[in-house]
Image 1 (tube, rainbow, N blue to C red):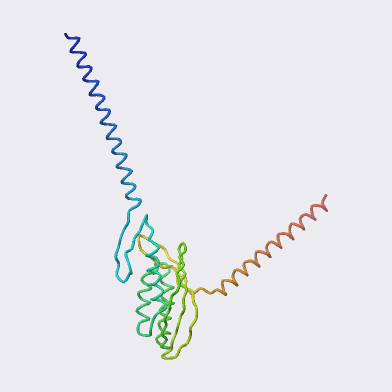
Image 2: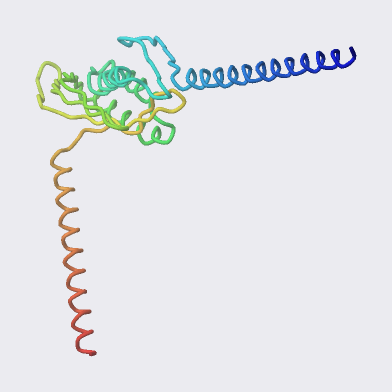
Length: 219
């Protein structure tokens, strides 16, 4: 009789042990699955904002903004910088400078406020009709036609390309540089670099030839 009770208790303990192992295994699987889903949610989370004066929502995926947001910012920047009149230029440049990085701000403020002074003095108005936006890693190129007036007199109508260097820091769009792209200057720079490289190669070849002749004379 005691043997039967012992066998029964042993069997019950064995079953309880199996159930406990199963429960622990199920909990481990659940924890792993939950951890994976949390990681996936954090990795692919979207932060959606609706800022004023923008054409749509702003989405950041994995800390990077969507192309639509960058294009909206491009239009805002180029309008602030190139479409103005004497009464509005200084205020627009104030708004533009608020987008600059802290490192670039001092030099940029001197440049933009100097331009504002010249605009107010000469009464020049400007309008930029943008045609294309080209996005690259960390830079934006905006091509279009710039029209400038002094009073009612047209001063200039010309195709222009403006380049913005930017970064995204803590979810904030920041400008490090805004400039007009000078195609001729860029071409001259590339030409000068090519000429320098060719001259360095020529010097290296000449030195190698001299060293070789000296070696032959030594032998």
